[in-house]
Length: 214
Image: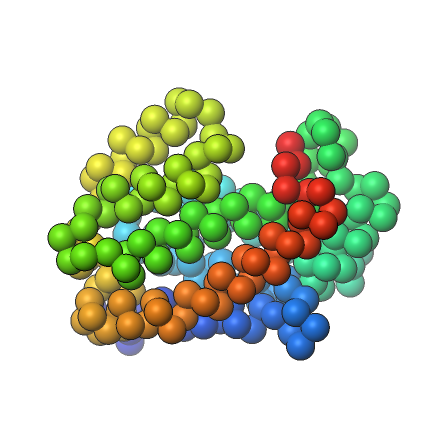
């Protein structure tokens, strides 16, 4: 199945994260949302196995689109402006998820954590040998990122589901950039864009003590 049939190419999605940062290294939320939509398409193309993440991501993207198009939308043009606005107007629940459960800060934090998992997993696919087990790669990435925020029963169900993942070659071919070798090369070129967006976001949230929002 080629790009013309699917309209999807993971390199285009990953490189789109480069557009998320402007010259001031502000994370532009319109581009961030669009880039995430591309990642959801990739996850969906692999079947229902990642629905536990993609469904949650889709709901979070809808929240962000609503905030972006709402009456205070100008405050949600970038991650930096959003944090300044919500923190400054006490629109973030720092200890208990009560008054502002769908704040932009909380919503993007969930996307931020999921992005870390996907970044680690794709990096694992890139650097692993041909016979590497994708279930192990995905579990290791999950345990190093999202697992800390999920209850035991979810962690158990997810890691069991990972055992049904397709082979490394199938994953790489699903990226629609050519052979498995070409996909590995593409990941080496494009993953730094995701890493950069993640690191800028991580630093911003850390500076405002927002990394553990309930």
